[in-house]
Structures are given as C-alpha cells and as structure tokens.
Image 1 (cartoon, chains in turn purple, orange):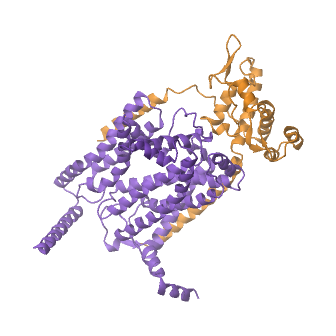
Image 2: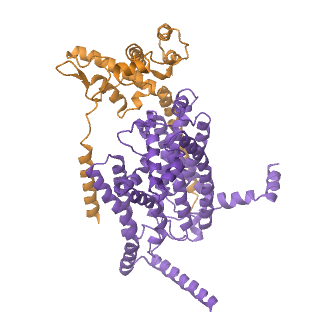
Length: 417
Length: 216
C-alpha cells in the first residue's frame, strides 16, 4: 500500500527523487565542523518562532488600549501562555545569536567566496527581513521601550531627502506612533516570517547547487563527500539537542534577562524613558548610528554597516582559497572585527557620555576600515604568503584556477573572433 | 600582531572599568525570601498597607485564594466585589492627584518594571531618610511622592529596623510573585525539560559517534 501510494505520487510529483537527491544522498563534505550546524539551527529557530507566534496571535490584541493587557492575559490566564510568550521572546534573541554565529562562520572560513556569492546575498536579504520582523515584533507588547524604540527608529526616515516628513507619517500611519502603527506592525510581523520562509527556500536551492563549503576552503574531491543522511541528520540532531538545552535555560530560568524592565511599563507617549536602548542584537548598529553627529549621516552609516557585508565577495581579492585557514592576516582582521563588534555593542548599550561617544566613533571607523582595507590587505597577504611558499596543494589549486580562467578567456575570445 | 591585540584588549578593559564606576546609588542586595509563608504575609501587608493607594489590576481575588490566602480573609478584602474581580484601589485617580500630585502606579508588575527588580523594590522601601524638619525623601528615588509607609526613616533602633526590613522583604516577595505568578511552575517544569534534553542529547551524541564510526 505504502509503496503503491508512493509510486502513484512519484508519477505525478518527484517526491522520492527530491527526498533522495536533497536530503538523503545530498553530498556533504565530511570535514564540516560543528560551526556548520548553525544553518539548520536557524531554520529550526524560524519554525519555532512561527509556531509560537501563531498561538500567541490567538490571544494577542493589536490595539493600543488592549495590547499591554493582552500580554499579561497570555502570561497569567492562558494555559502555558507564559511558555509560549517566553519561547517567542527568548526565541528572537536565540534566532539572532544563531544567525550571527552562522555569519561569523561564513566570514571566518570565507564561505561567501565564489561560487557561493548568491548564498551570501540571499543570506544578507534574510538578515534584513529578520531585522525588520524583529523590530516590528518588538512594538507589539506596547511597553515603554516598544513605543520609544519604534518612535526613534521610524523617526530616522526623516533623513530621506525632500520627502522625509511624509515618509515618517506614511510608515507610522499617523503623526505619532499610535494605534495605526501598532496594527500595521502586527500585520507585517505576521506576514514577513512567511516571506522569510520563501527566502530560505531560495537560500537552500542555492546551497544545493553549490553545496556546502568546508573548513579547508577547498572544494573537496568526490571521495571526501559523504551522504547527508545519516551522517548529518544525526549530527544536526545532536547539535539541536545542545542548542535546546541552552535555549531552555533562558526560557525557564532567565526569561527576563532579555526583556528591558522599562518594557513592563505600558507605553506612555508623554514620558520619555531616561535612556532608550534597542534589543541587544541591534546594539552595534545603534552605536554606529549614534556615532555620526549628523542624522542623515548616521542613518547612512547604519544602513551601510549592515549592507556592506554584501560587498565581501568583491572586497576579498585574495586568490588563496578559503578564509582564515591559510591566511593569518585575514584571521587577525576577523578576530579584531569580532572584538570591535562587542565594543560597539557596549557603546550602544550605554548612555552617551564624551567617553562612550569617542569610543563609539573610534569603533565605527575601525568597523568600516576593516572592510575598506580588505582588498589591499588580501592582495598584500597573498603576495607575501606566496613569496614565502604556500603548501604545495594550495599552490596547485591556485594555478588550476588560473589555468581554468585563461582557458575560459581564450574560449570567449575564439567565439568572438 | 599578538602584542597589538593584547594592547587593544588592555585599552578596552580600562575603558570598561572607567565607565562602569559612575553608577547611581548602590542597591541593597539583601536576599528576598521565596517561601510561601513570607509571600502570604507580604500579601496581607500589601493589601492592608499599599492597596489604599495602589492597585494590583492583574491579580484577581481568586489568584489570592490559589496562592493560599485564607478564604475568610479574601472575603474581607473583596467585600461586595465578585471573587473573580481584579484587585483595585478604592482611591480615585482624581483624589490621588489631589493628595500626591500623581496617580500611584499599579503594583502588579512593579518588581519587573524597575531596573534591579526585587533589589530595587526592597532598597526603595528601606531607603527613606528624614531631614531635620522631619520631611522624608528616598535615597533611591529622590523626590518620591510616596510617604514612608513602613517608617524606615524614623527607625533607628536595630530591632525596629530589623522588623521593618522583614516587612519590606515580605512585601517584595509578594510583589515578586505578583509580577510573574507562574515563575515557580516555570522553574519546576524547566528542571524536567532540561533533564530530559540532557538525557536525549547524550543519547544522540552516542548515536552520532556510532554512525560516524562506520566512516573510514
């Protein structure tokens, strides 16, 4: 019966073929480290947010008179409502943590390089969608930080040339953040995750075309690839177990550490909190925004600080394969960049004082310098390393690439001639 | 390169400690009880002492019954209000404004709505000071409109202070419960969930090792 049903379906839809090709036999480098677990973890974080979100939506009221109370209703009266809410609120942080580690891995191992540029760019799009979704979701509890965070961020669009004021009103649906803003943020907060799911599909199709990168930075020979199932299904499941333990510690024992205390006060448009801070995952970008004295300049710097990642495949000029494995200068830049992100995060969390402002400006300049110096550093580094002598197999790979390139060029020229 | 990294880190640590030191008044980190007897005494104190001006709108009288308050006491508290009514103050916002200049905040979320949480709450209750004219103020919230209900400013005798401190702790313990009534259930469930996940993860790990051992 089972077999006949499957046959019936397979005549009409490539079900078995798809599962076999994409989930079972899918060739995966055998040398992947646990840093490669974070892609699947991100997918699971997304699914958990969507499921808890749908159930929360059954009890939440997107109305400025009722939103705050409805959260308390969920926390107190709905059966296991507190669990849904804390999984969802901690889940947002967990999602960002996983995504940031996933990005850091990509940067460290140079996974963004050819032929995986489209993976990197679809990932960049996913990051932007995730940020938008999280930002809008944060307004929904209608606490003080929700309100003022949304007010500050929507106000940034005032920097749009000529039509700034209109853009802000258009975004808010009112002159101030109010009921119109809350309902539209709610609608979009429900919509965007499904667009994210679609974008994840694109990300995965790209992945299954170019296949996973691996710590060596070299495309492995066929013998070094192993089928996804059972090797990586079990490895991902084990990773998921570890992830869920850490996640549960936050959900059950530390759920309030990630919620600003001011957000347990209902939104009050007449009373600005002493100091407005975004969620931790926005802090470095917020610090960059505040480090530029001019509003428009700050907005541009902040937007660039996120978008500049997309330029990585162009900025990295080195011919040495992979990321940090054979490239000490790149590795040092990577670590300094990570340290600098934490500095920016610290600056973003603190009220502005002359000290933090200066530190923030220094860190902002450093942030962009790393990207802008990369073309030059990667070229210099390549020359230096090749003069000193790279491992023979790496040198061979570079030569292979160069030969392939010349062949392609000759082919093209012949065609044109 | 290593030297440069060390230097950067050293500079960072310096700047961190420089900015961390200019904090506000240090909160009193006395341990706040979590046993049900203290919470119940806190409930009575809050209803008797605080409810005159402050509401607890997310708490219903039925919640008090569930907490373990004697049904007779709850009946006295609610008078002619239905048992599933929310606990509100009898003071109207207008009367409050006339008397204190502000509407006293609702207390249901008080311990999670202030930085420092329970420690802020306790410190605030104990933080009253009196000047020579007998006017009171609060170290942790200068200019507060709330009178020194527990009399912590006037209490100088250690025994008296200890009594007030116990009351302040009990009030804080109750408000901490009120801010998140399911906290105990949550922690209880959390222990089981994490124990289960630990077991599952260990098994998954051995399964993983077993599967990967087939690879040459």
